[in-house]
Length: 313
Image (tube, rainbow, N blue to C red):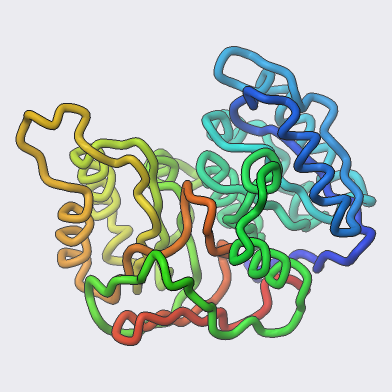
C-alpha cells in the first residue's frame, strides 16, 4: 500500500472541528479556536455533535463517529482538527469507514487520545496525519509562536521541510547516540500500548517511534514500554524520540520508586538504537508538529531531526 499525502491547506479553505474523545469543560474554548482559525483567513465548520456530553465522552460513539464521517465526506472540508483529547477514539476504530478516508484523504490534526485514530488510519489507509495543536487547547489560548510557525508550515507547504529547529528549552538529550532514517509513528504511549495485538496496530518496522505521556506514574510508564519491547515494537523500530512526560511522578513520594527519566534511560539502553529525549512535543504548549507516517532522519549524536519530504501535496 502506497503512502497517502493529504492535499495542502490554502487560505480560505474550510476546516472541520470535531470532538472524537472527551467533552470540553469550557465550550467558549471551541469558539475561541474557531476565531483563531478565521483570523488567519480560514473558514471553520463545527461538527453537528460537538458540545454534546455522554459521561466522560463527547457524545455517544455513534454521534462522534458521525461527525468524523461527515467531515471526510464533505468535499468542502480540507482539514479536520480535533477539539481536545481525553478518552474515546479507541471506541470508534471498529465503527469508522476507512474506505471513506482512503477515497477522501484530508489533514487530520490532534494528539493524546487521538493517537489511536491516527495509527489506525496509517494501518488501514497509509494516510499521513498530524500530531499537533488542537482547536480547544492551543488554538483557544495564545498559541506559542514556535508551535504556530512549524504547524502552519507543515500543513501549507508542498516543499520538502528539511531540518526541524528545536527551541532552546527544553534542550534535547541523547540517550543512545547514532543516526537512522525511518517513518515517524507513535504518539501518546498509553494509546500506542492499547493497540498492541489489535488489527489497528501498525507495522513499526523501520519506524522512528515517538512517544509522550501525561499523569502516569513511573512504574506504569515502565510497564507500557516493556509491553512495546515484549511485543517486538522495539526490535522493529530503527530509532526513538521521547517527548515530554508531563506530571509523570510517583503519587506516593514516601515509597521507593524509579523516576520517569530513569525509566526512559533504561528503556533506551535496552532499545540499543538511536534515542533522543526531552523533545518539545506532548502535553505542553511548545510543541513540534509531527506528521505520523512521514520519512525522517534523526541524528542522536548531533541532536537533530530532518523531515525528508513534504507532509502534504
